[in-house]
Amino acid sequence: MQRDEVTGIVLAGGRGSRMGGADKGLQNFNGVPLALHTLLRLQPQVGDTLINANRNLSAYESFGVPVWPDALPDFPGPLAGFLTGLEQSDTPWVVTVPCDTPLFPADLVARLGAAAERDDAEIAMASAAEADGQLRTQPVFCLLRRDLLDSLVRFTHGGGRKIDAWTAQHKTVVVPFDRPGDEPRAFFNANTLAELRELERR
Image 1 (tube, rainbow, N blue to C red):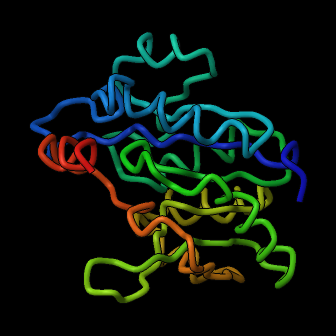
Image 2: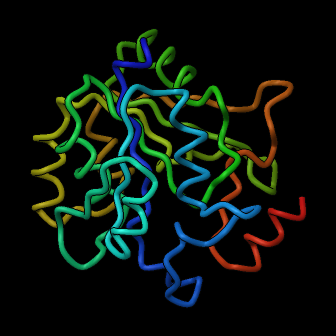
């Protein structure tokens, strides 16, 4: 899979409720807004990029890429960002990454793409070890065929909000990021300001 076949979507459209309502993507990580850090980490892996955000749109636009709010009202969750990305991209594939996981792998898209092509899958989803050592899926790190748009429209307009419930309807390959040398904190996400500062200290 070539880079220019994939559009990267930075998901920054949440309420930030566990950060006291702060716009999570604009919180600094080592002096750089989280969403910009994520964008810069993603851009070398894909062709085009865009940001999904619902607040402070001009701040996100200053990062130099298109910014699109959710197509669905009332902050319905990550699937709304998936939907926005599929609607606004014109590449065969879209990859989603959340703005609050700044250390995600530099080879994320390559490994998801290789697995999707190997298994002729419609979706490739990352999995990684958590604190207890168990591998768990990371559903917001998702490579999707763009032709899944109609399916996702039907699912979300029918009230569906859970990523796993939608991806279960399609051929999905789960890609473990547990090779020797893989960064164990790669999928650590900062839900609170305290977790963000802890991640900086590490």
